[in-house]
Amino acid sequence: MKKYVCDVCDWVYDPATGDPEGGIAPGTAFEDIPDDWVCPVCGVGKDQFSPVDE
Image 1 (tube, rainbow, N blue to C red):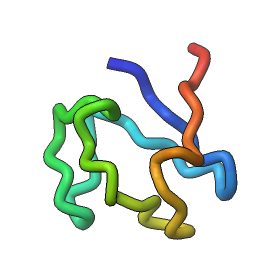
Image 2 (cartoon, rainbow, N blue to C red; image 1 turned 120 degrees about the vertical axis):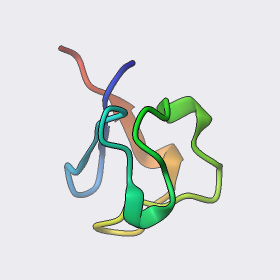
Image 3 (cartoon, rainbow, N blue to C red; image 1 turned 45 degrees about the vertical axis):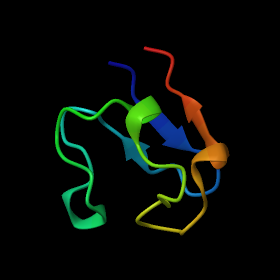
Image 4 (cartoon, helix red, strand yellow; image 1 turned 60 degrees about the vertical axis):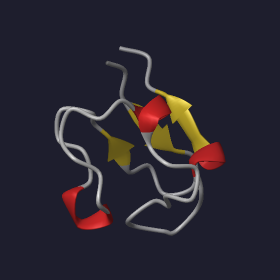
């Protein structure tokens, strides 16, 4: 599963870790996160994230 980085604050969503405080369980692909989820650091929406090139 691909990692995604916030275009605003550079926080990285790692599917292996998820966002437990935001209600996203580890193992959740970015595409499967609800559309109303926001970055836990700066609060922007999913549309402000880009795939990480590894």
